[in-house]
Length: 423
Image (cartoon, rainbow, N blue to C red; front, side):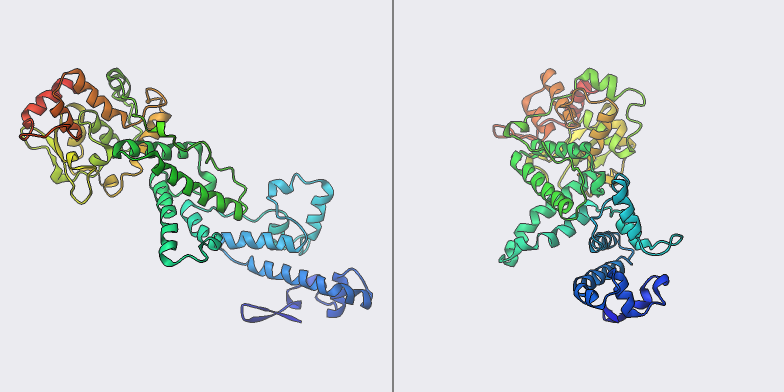
């Protein structure tokens, strides 16, 4: 008696437990059916044989190093034996009789139990660690029914926003295993979107679409793969009023908390320098992250940075500007004359990294504060010093509600203004 497996014929009897090896094949079937009656065996044979083959197939499928396939095989083997797959901690909590039934169903010997049986019936199969990017790969197969009837362009338009949402999340939080995603991770992602809405003048709907598509991918994989995870995906969407401006840090907070000795020592060098550079330039985090050595001018009489496209698109034509370097911002750029290669190609995770650090170390003035508040603090100091509106808008990279005449303030003039307001 044999079965076909991946094009090969496998003898069923050479894979049975050794204690049954000497039994005549016909009697082996009777024994499996708990009878010594040929007629009773004949009546039970069909369903029992199907169940036996299903169990054998599942056991063979379990012989793989692929965690997802092995876990799926363990579930199938448990079902073929008449049990529901449970994790080991759940098996341990079963009533005594149910637990003993599972133990008794494990093949092998008392000293050498069948490993695949044990994994399937006693919950010992290691659960696969599905990452966010892997979840997206699985999602396409799990939702194939939703693509029926769509042409190539419709499929592309259906897939792209989901790919975008996953890529954004991975860039900000990292390619974490689904089981490791925390509420703080989701708040960091939401905070990144809040800053993006404010910096680029986007609608909250842009962020909500990302959150919806991200949630749909993760929840679908969690459900269909039976991971039984509690994912922190609720209460994250934006209302129209949520796009309000982030509050500025007070000067006292910046001096006494952010610039206190050792306060930022736990941040990586580049993230710390970008934070310090923001304080006296008001530049956006992404603008600083993209700076190259050619845009950092330290040998001039007026050290400065040049915000230019240089391989990336600026937020607007007004974002192109020159900003003198003074105070802690000058020192930060002197320590990084080549710029910030860690974040140059992608600054998506920069704000999340800094905000997470500030939150964990009690360096956010209120729960509503974020890194972006340093840009508003810079503008507030210019307002308090009665700096001309044209100069303020030039420094911030904002549009002017009238025609711009002339070149604006000279570098020396801008430097003198910033020296009066720097921290």
